[in-house]
Length: 273
Image (cartoon, rainbow, N blue to C red; front, side, top):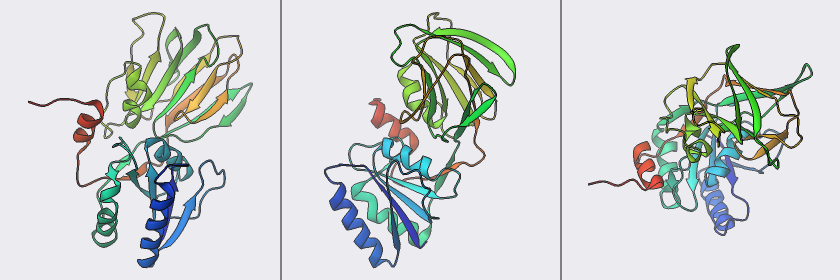
């Protein structure tokens, strides 16, 4: 590994000091450092490793910047433990030594690709790790959404919105909307309605390579589609949002110090006897 990227959470109190210390340490290991700017539309150069300093939001942003690449990502949390940023700052350098000298254990996380079809024109959208969310935005009315999967009609719902998440994203917005937790090794997409008008509109789990199409039937202006909760595209009546599994998975370096279930216990404050 020679070329190392760093993505830093903007304006974090520890950010500059941590970045300076890490850069100097990497230079001493004869590494080249590339700093990723959040929101930069230009793709970074090829990287052998990407280190994310921040929280899960910073991780999601950085993951979109290297989407489709074969870049392993190490998430380092500068605050409390995250679902995606499993490594603490105190563990950073010992983990890097292990990675450079002995290799690492990794997960290959499913990502989602999507586009919006409007009047026979397809608008490509960002590849996401967590979720694609159709939301009413500033509207006070419920959205009217029609859902098809693999060209088969499923249902029409009235709700504040609909979350289409990966297994990784099941612990994000979907969870707060009543969706189940899905282990990230499961190749699945999860459709979770947001405050549906009918209580029988329940979360639905489908295989990850299914073709999910959601048509906006509402005539009012204001609905949006969000990507990992960070990027937004405005929707119009009769727009069709199409979502499926992306071809490339994301390489996520795992912490040797804790398991997925330990992270769940800590984040969700589960108990033990």
